[in-house]
Amino acid sequence: MILMKDIIREGNPTLRKIAEPVTFPLSDEDRQLAADMMAFLENSQDPELAEKYHLRAGVGLAAPQVDVSKQMSAVLVPGPDEPIFKDVIINPKIISHSVQNAALAEGEGCLSVDREVPGFVPRPDRITLRYQDLDGESHKIRLKNYPAIVCQHEIDHLNGILFFDHINKQDPFAAPDDMIIIE
Ligand SMILES: CC(C)(C)[C@H](NC(=O)Nc1cc(F)cc(F)c1)C(=O)N(CC(=O)NO)CC1CCCC1
Ligand SMILES: [Zn+2]
Image 1 (cartoon, protein in one colour):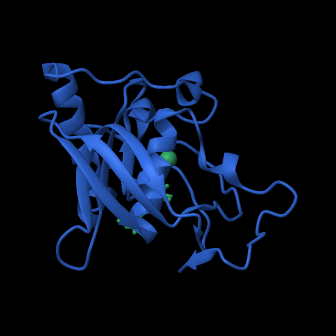
Image 2: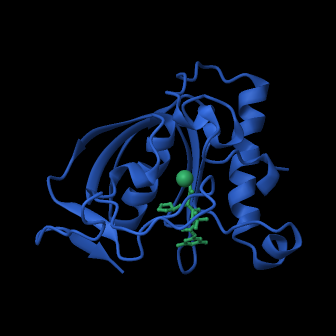
């Protein structure tokens, strides 16, 4: 079971590496890692388990965050009933995106960053994402708004990028008038 102590933090060089592509068929180790990463997100979104195991409620976790430099991230965006998006995205690539950007009104945080870094994190509001699932099946999906933000945050981790790399240093809350602010 992945716990917060298993998640590496800012300063660990693995977070700044470009992760290795995953080869198929998945090794038993990679399959177990994917299951453990998704289980972490599910556990962390369960109030009782989150309290019991001191977990921060997470919507995404990338393999580099548990010190495994592989192109694999688990994403679990909860919905009112069913999750809005739930999958392990392997070897993901954003193949096209909107010119228009969006940013979360609250800014972003990260399971690997134990400090607040205020500011808008501008990202394309809409993306077309190609990735492989656990069986190696290729998917091409379009995402927008919050699910698109989450997937971009996780794909950044696979490329050694952290959310605050995108914050405007001169004016952290600079917002071009065509940027969507997601409440
Ligand atoms: C850093 C943290 C605050 C833990 C953030 N959680 C989060 O946004 N919580 C949340 C939101 C919901 F809508 C429903 C829910 F159940 C929990 C998160 O998991 N991440 C993922 C991460 O750090 N991945 O590496 C940071 C988010 C910032 C923008 C996208 C992901
Ligand atoms: Zn993160």
